[in-house]
Image (cartoon, rainbow over all chains, first blue to last red; front, side, top):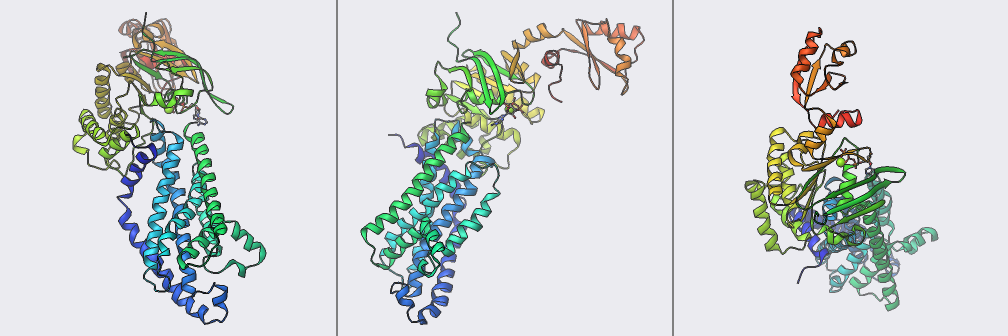
Length: 261
Length: 309
Ligand SMILES: Nc1ncnc2c1ncn2[C@@H]1O[C@H](COP(=O)(O)OP(=O)(O)OP(=O)(O)O)[C@@H](O)[C@H]1O
Ligand SMILES: [Mg+2]
């Protein structure tokens, strides 16, 4: 039995990753620890003192509110960053995609491999955050295990559309702009740090339309065990799946146009 | 009756928007042959190679490899090709060995088989001692040899080499030529592009000269030289800026001549005789050289331009 093509491509990703994972691991632990200490305990001490905040936050402490959001935002960051520069690199600098194109591999195999790799990378990142969260009594729960796949889904909802963008590019000038004007604002306004209901209507609806908000809602309800109707859960999942699928299909089309020109 | 050609192209065209990179070319490549595309920058060599490699759809004409149509059987054809692209596409971060094994996996070889072939091929390109080293620090010639080893991992029926030795020093080029010559002796069909006349003469049984997307001549290196040049060439160098004044000396001493910026070429059956005539007529060149004519002269004859500026 031969191994499916996308899995054989992953052997390349793994070979490259094996050389760098150690250095990236420390930061991926350190970052959530710092965030949870600063946001959860620092800001949280102020927020929890405010009567009424408990109601707005859905009856949980601030750290319990903020921490699950960090699962989704971290996965988003990893999915986005790993789909911009590395995709461009494999296209233009390292030419690994060109090498693959000369073999029996097809654009669909390359894109499927990218999706799987992004699931793996966002999975590692989310699991690291979950492990750190387990250190904080207020957020420690079995639901964390279920929240990891929800975070992965949020991650590839960004990874695939951005991978589709990256594979059309001739320069990487737009990448820092995407990071600064899309990813960072979403990080701040995607519902991870405060409920969107606090915001003016327009901004609120922009927030609701982004995949991140849906990922945050899923992660939060799974971690905190707060109620989420089956319909709402399906809605969140479906919305994220649509972004990932549409992005993947676009990326395949663009990869074909680019690699088989 | 010649056997069915491995590559059969008629009226082959490649268009990028309004720009025509390959403008209706016809050629056949027979099994076991070493076939070359010779031409200057922008002639359309790489565009042609990419169409043959089934990574670039044709814009017109017909193209068949192994009797198959790239438009419908690209994957089946690519399975049987080895490709050495113009620019190296090795993963610089990985080791030489890893590059080969991973590439072998793209062809669905088992890991054990890919490993076995990698060992064999690294021996073939004389890089066994570098198997475990990263690609990045290797010299240009070594990287080229790794790329050639990689292209052979699927035991291809047809090897496509786009400028295999461009940018390499003479010694590295000779090592590569030697390896390619061995492959040819083993019966591997080679299709290569080059800027270099000596490379085409060394490696190709038959070649086409391309210029601006068209084929301007076809034949064996010997045939092309016989048809489009003379047996010998006399190169006369006069003091800078006096070529035009001295052109008269080149008249009538050979079959024809060319005035280049830095020298005058006289095409003659016997170069020494032509030189004697020029000196007899009073020519005072700074230097004179008689050499056998090469494909470079063929190209100059066909296009009025030198090949490597
Ligand atoms: N993807 C592309 N889009 C637009 N134009 C292209 C593309 N690829 C090649 N060309 C143009 O087609 C022409 C032929 O290019 P090609 O790379 O085939 O030439 P070449 O003979 O391989 O040249 P070189 O010796 O420099 O490698 C050039 O003018 C080039 O600019
Ligand atoms: Mg070229």
